[in-house]
Image 1: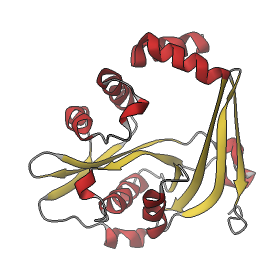
Image 2 (image 1 turned 180 degrees about the horizontal axis):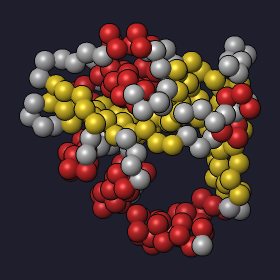
Image 3 (image 1 turned 90 degrees about the vertical axis):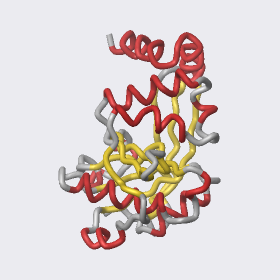
Image 4 (image 1 turned 120 degrees about the vertical axis):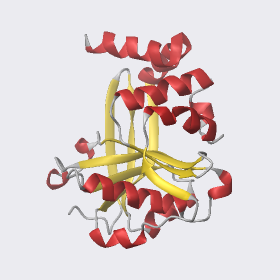
Length: 218
């Protein structure tokens, strides 16, 4: 039933073209990402400021049209069509993944991010597993908002909000060539754990972590 449910969900989200991509991915896929981690620090609340005319808040399903309109061009090839993007955004809200946005007074969304369940415990040391943690996902700001620390403030705002629910450890997986995003995370206290490799070989999931020398388990 698990595989059938996964197939039905893929058809629902991405259509039959998505099924073909999923089959190809299940045969063999590999992702190589930089893994970073940050523990919630109450002192960070002092850094959570917004420019005049903006507000940071938790998003609702009603924000989907504005999020889709602001979705960055570099993210769009992943979804192939606008309808796939809309179905995926709806699925995020169906799954109750917390989403946080930075909104201008004209209702335009300048930045957004999701906090999805952390699913890579098997790559961590035993002492690191089972924490109340989450993964920062699909973080973006629109081009004209970049270089203004808007993404950094949104991350800290989200961490403050989730800390009230006991979620105090944030992970982030970032492509090695996305230097601006790596800098943003490290600027606000994220530490590099190492290189996380994951993927599938004939349907079987695998993941492994090559730690940086200074990134000892805590």
